[in-house]
Image (tube, rainbow, N blue to C red; front, side):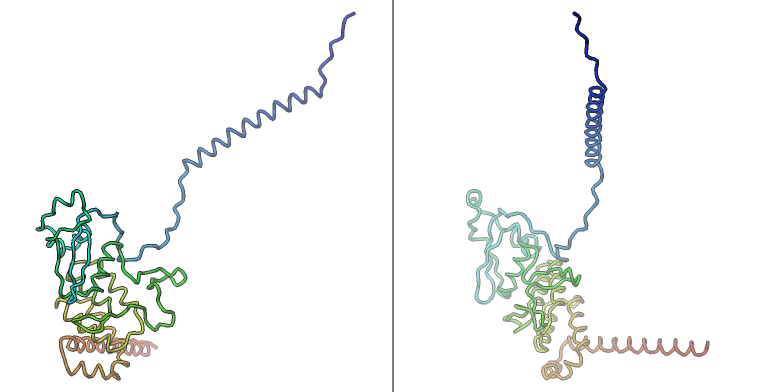
Length: 299
């Protein structure tokens, strides 16, 4: 007896078609996903907006130095500081002291030991000022550092007091100037050591100081005039503009009267700046009056 062959039912055929179709769809999906991933890999990545993390007029810290160590004897009290030669030579002033000195063979095995001949004497310098300069040379900034306030979109000093009563460490006692602004002393030292980036940074920070009394400002201005060349204009102009803007306070100050009686180049420059300021105001008033009269004539 012959057995009958069971015909393939439509259900089996449909299942086969469905399985074949699902396999094709999965293959196409894999191909499309691989193509999209390859396109995403080669597609240009949009640039993100960079955050302001580096303050202006600052430098990028260098890698850990391994050069010989040089000793610096600072101030009337002869305080000792140690700094690497590769850091100090960023200043042409210190580079002149470092180049003629021959390093000891001891540096090849123990570079952290300083050579007895490698010592720089700075009897007129303030230890606080030199400490800030070394901090700048090593780290690119000095305390208080500049911080960017994203809400106000402005730079400000860290640890600044919100009530405007002054910032910590704004003044120092200098043996050649009395109580003066620390940034002024740093600016003058940067002028001496030929560090223009530090000069700009110190001037910017000084512009952010608040709550400084008249006597400190006048003492700092005298110090700036005594320790900068006649061709210097930025720091001197800063003090002249500050006094002119705050003339209502200074004209009531007894310290201002005493300082003016002492005289000096500072007050001659202040007189010239005041005259220029008055001339500019007068020219502006005349321009406004002339413009108004022309408009009335046209009317």
